[in-house]
Image 1 (cartoon, rainbow, N blue to C red):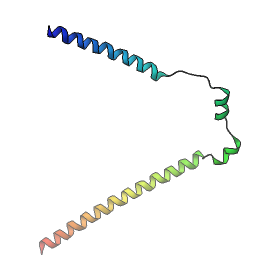
Image 2 (cartoon, one colour):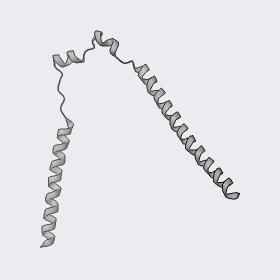
Image 3 (tube, rainbow, N blue to C red):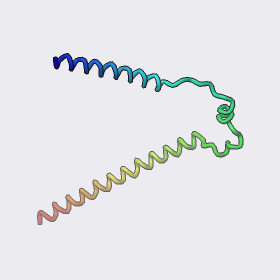
Image 4 (cartoon, rainbow, N blue to C red):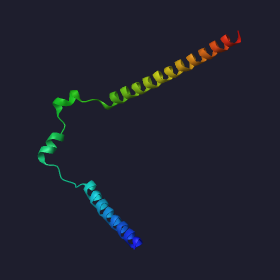
Length: 98
């Protein structure tokens, strides 16, 4: 009796989860809607705003410089930590042998 109850509950849960997955997949898919005149006008290029537009090459170069500086700073920090650890070991070795 408990077996039948257990299987009916599990089959019900499976079927309800499949219904939910189907509904989520449909809502996530979205629908293609053609742009209206207002949206097209907003997306059109405006010559008066051209001077405020960032240039891709300049932005890419700036990001590259930032990445290089980040690597240099991290390497410098690692070297400082390494140098301090080595200095402590040398100080302990010199102090312990006296």
